[in-house]
Amino acid sequence: MTSVMLERNLTLKSKRLTLRPFAEEDYPAVKEMFLDPKIYATYMIPNFPDEEAIIKLFNSFKNASEKPGHFVYAIANEKEFVGFLNYTTASGDEIEIGYAIHSRHWGKGYATEAFKAAIEELFRIGYRKIRAGHFQENPASRRVMEKAGLKPIELVETISYRGRDHVVNYLEIVRK
Image 1 (cartoon, rainbow, N blue to C red):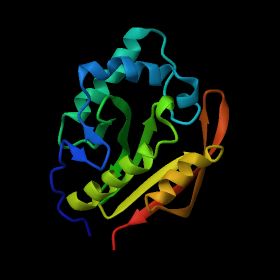
Image 2: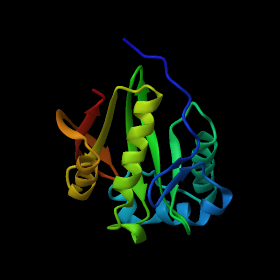
Image 3: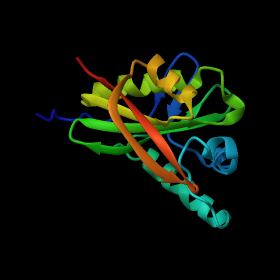
């Protein structure tokens, strides 16, 4: 049974963060993230043949973040853009989300805080099951998901990315 979905809030607040639509001034930090080997080792980002391709992906995130029907947010602290969160698939009352935090902001708890805010909003608007996956070689991402309340599930798949196979483990949380 699918529940009626409410419209998402375009801006979410947590203790230290604001999840909001992307802004033009986010572009330099987003570009750094898209080109950071630490980021694309753990978050599936395409290879970019030129800056035009980076701009195109940035604009795609920006446009989606401005539309209520899409679950895409820039994550910012009081001073600057620190990362982003987006849905990868959605069907009925189930959704899969992913996130990336700029590597200079790793270890500050931003990913867990943003993930918790996203889960609260997704449950509020009517989703019943939220899923996320992480490369098996990225235990830090798994810890973020577990701290946000997700539990490991049986689903495991292998994805070919950047010339090698990665085992992806999934976790989920179900609204009671």
